[in-house]
Image: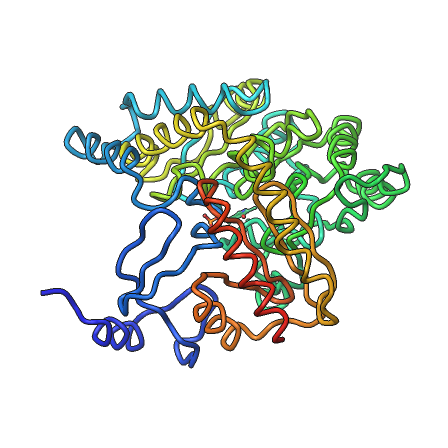
Length: 428
Ligand SMILES: *Cc1c(COP(=O)(O)O)cnc(C)c1O
C-alpha cells in the first residue's frame, strides 16, 4: 500500500539527510507525488512549475515518453554489466556522440557516476599525465575563487575556499592555489589587466601545477556569475605558455544551458580535459564523463603505471548511457539553440522589474539561466514557502535567487515563473 504524505514526511524526519541540511532542520519539506513536463506535483495535489530543472539536469522535462522508452527498452536487454573487459552498444554510441559534439580534439571518454567523481578523475588524469612525463612534482591545481566543482575531497579542494568551507576540513583537504574570480563580466570589453593575477600565479607556481581547473563562462553554484569569453580564451593560451593543462568543468554548462552547446564554444577553445554530468542523461539518472585529448591519454598510458588508475563499479551503466543517447538525440532534433536564446530574452524581460527593488543588487541572464542577486542572503526556510504559494519551485542559495528551467518550458509557464520571482522579491 502506498504511504500517505504524513507517513513519508515522518519517516523522512526520522531517518533521512537532505543536501546541505541539518537532521534537526525545521524547514518545511514537500513530498512529491509525481512530475510531468515542467511541473512537480506534490502529494497534497499542488502543482509547481519547476524553475530548477532538478539542479540543471532535467532539460527536456519530466516523464518524457521517449526518454522513458529508452530506459524501458534497455532494461529488458541489460540493466548493467561490468565494464572491465566488456563493452556495449549504449556506451559505444554515447562516446561517439560526446566526441562529436564536444570541442574538437577531445577523443577519449572515461565514464563515471557523478559530477564530483568526474572532477576527481580529471585531476587524476592531469597528475598522471605529468607523472608520466617525468614531472611528478606537477601535482597541484590552480582554481578560480567563487568556483564550485563538487563535494568529494579533491573536488572540494578546488572549490572556493570560503564558500567551500575549507577551514572545516583544514589539514585533510589538499592545499591548492587560487586566483581571483574573473573580473571581466560576460560581454564586457576585454583588457589584459584582467589576467594579471592568474598570470602571476602561473609564473610563480607552474613548476608544481598540473592543471588550471575552471567552470567556463558560468561560475555556477558558487556564484552564478557570467564572465568574459576573452578571459577563457586567454587563460587557455596562458596554460599552453606555462605548460599547465586546462580542465574545463562543464558539468553545469554542458548541453546548451548557457546558449552554446558547451561554454568552451564561446571562446572557441579545446581544454585538455573536460568534465560532463548533470544534463548528460536529461536528468534521468546519475552519469558523468571525463573527456581528454589523445595526447593526454597516450601520455598517461605510456607512463610508469601503463594505464589510468580508476574504474568505478557502475562505469558506463547501460541504462544511463541509453537514456543519455536519447537525451542528446532529442536535444539535437529540438533546435535547442533558438529555444534557449528565446528563454534568455524571456528571462531578461520577465526578471527586469526586480531591478526596481532596493533589496536587489543585480539581475543577469545568460542562455536558460536567470539570476536575481540580492544585497543580503535570503532565508531559505521562509522564502521557499512563498514560492510554493505562487505555484513555482525555486530554491535560492545565499544572495542568489536563480532559475535554470527545462528548455521545453512554454512562454506562459516561464512568465508565471518570472512573475512569481518578482512578487516574492518585492516582499523581501
Ligand atoms: C554540480 C556540479 C558538480 C558536482 O556534480 P555532482 O553530480 O553533484 O557530484 C561539479 N561541478 C559543477 C560545475 C557542478 O555544477
